[in-house]
Image (cartoon, rainbow, N blue to C red):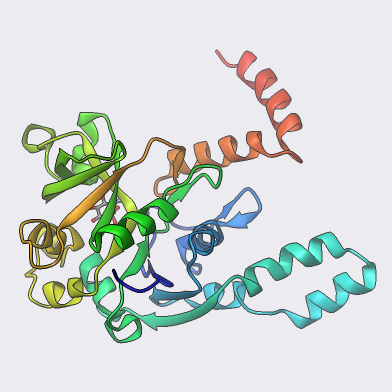
Length: 296
Ligand code: G1P
């Protein structure tokens, strides 16, 4: 059995083109979802699953990310003076979450290339990868379960979600076999963003992975694939096809997932999360009812 999984890698070097001009001077991971940047939900989820060390793969504009997870002494002093301890607690939460590290991706050569940049930091241990566009509701368990299965079976584990077949070209799509556990499948094949006609199933890869360190060796020899980029999906396909690396398993997730990667889904995520909150929820829900009633 492998040792405890304590490191996570978060690729955050994307250009955020879908959100321009908001992302002109700021990484898309810093876009607020209600009152927290999207990236903080993701780091909190990692920490909840036992991660203590996070490596972010960044691009230019990384300063806002680093600053968000750092102390702001003036702000802390000002809040303390005012006696606003609740806000102080919220401000400090992002600082105390985990041990954070940053490395730049350099050439944007795809998700596989971004993950490969973590090789030195991660070393010879299994590790988690979390993509910032997906937010998993903190009331539903995903990463913790993936870590458990990866540890028990000494394997790599990906997160799968049933999607409408028309959406296959937005995701890696998996072919799977059942196992003796209801939520666990064995992955027998993976293909990156197939057209609906070519999709082998409706099980899409969502942005959570727990990977054995051999993925780095495989990524090093993975040629550019879809979009001329080095695809993590292609490396995982090779690992799924071989017994050498413990295979690849999947957790079929049936909980709440919010996609903040495109504008419409981002708006939906904010409304859903705000409506569910204890503090804002009652007002948001009552306003929303009136707003919807007034629509044509
Ligand atoms: C990446 C992966 C894809 C996966 C998706 C999940 O694509 O390449 O296999 O299904 O994340 O969000 P991206 O969304 O970065 O284009």
